[in-house]
Amino acid sequence: MFAKIITGVLAFLLVLFPDWGSLQYQYQMRIFDRDKITASIVKAIDARDSAALKDLMCLNIKENVEDLSGKIDEVISTINGKVTKYRVESAGQYSSARDGKRVNQIGWDIYFSTATNNFRMHILWEVANNFAPDETGIRRILLLEGAPPHTELKSIWATEGVFGWHD
Image (cartoon, rainbow, N blue to C red; front, side, top):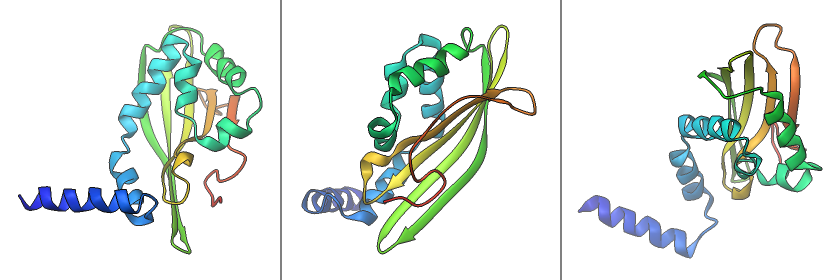
């Protein structure tokens, strides 16, 4: 009963103050699911679905990267075939707060194989942003060869705020 009351109060506050940073930030942190996002990325690669991958990008990339659909197609076409197996490793985190504004970004690597090649895909995801919620999503995608020295094959970057502060 108490949980329902608290949930109701929080929902009411979000209606009154939709940009109330602390609640919004906590909500964004709570709904983040790296494994689900990774599965969506792999599914988009296998389906050759650039629109699905584009939907995962942050607003900065969507608005500022020229020919984004073409660049996503290049990433996908570099991967020859369907993903046969993959594993995920954490690859850093950035968190900062200024003047009541908060940003949290998490990086991870997806190591995956196709029938003929191995790849490493680095993802930087903006998990929470209490002043620009549309900025959550992929801020950088970097496709590399799977074996060291992990030569870069393709990349898509936000124009600002990659493992750093942005407005």
